[in-house]
Amino acid sequence: MDPIQQMSSREVYRNDWMTVREDGIRRPDGSAGIYGVIDKPQYALVIPLDDDRLHLVEQFRYPLGLRRWEFPQGTAPELAEVEPLELAARELREETGLVAGKMADLGLLDVAAGMSSQRGRVFLATGLTEGPHEREHEEQDMRTAWFTRAEFERLVGTGEITDAQSIAAYTLLLLKER
Image 1 (cartoon, helix red, strand yellow):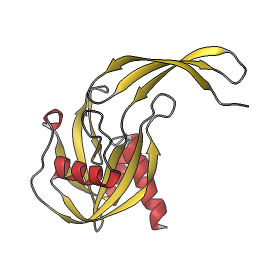
Image 2 (cartoon, rainbow, N blue to C red):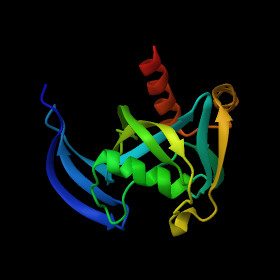
Image 3 (tube, helix red, strand yellow):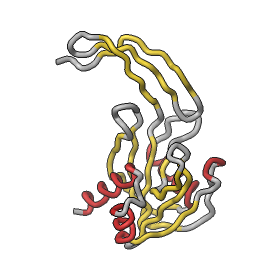
Image 4 (cartoon, rainbow, N blue to C red):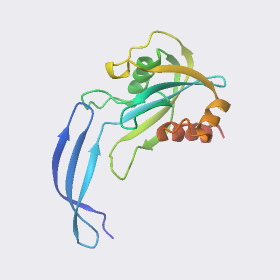
């Protein structure tokens, strides 16, 4: 069968971080429908690793109404597309103040393929040196901390760390270490 075909598209919302569009589609059986899509630029997620310790950030996630621990991650402002390695280094420095001596690409993740076109590259940062963070205005409440791998895994198991991208990125790390 042929995949779903886009017949029309209209932007229904835009800001500096995302656009939302509604597409008229034709399904493989020929029937018409609509699909809502959130378009965001590619993001980078960084796993800062120092021996057995992982560096995480905690911030308030407005859509959830909760503070959440996660690995440093983000996109460039104004819908800019930035080379993934450059974006990863920038996110790490902005959110934590850390600079990596080495960055290794661990793989690609899709955020929510049923509603978003956003994809992200995961990087392992090692050989870390500390410096001042350069947080964006929206990140002013951000905190950072080191966790052992055992602590991280326990927090995932108890539901205290629920960020899907962070959990999936850690899985990529474990698979790479096999």
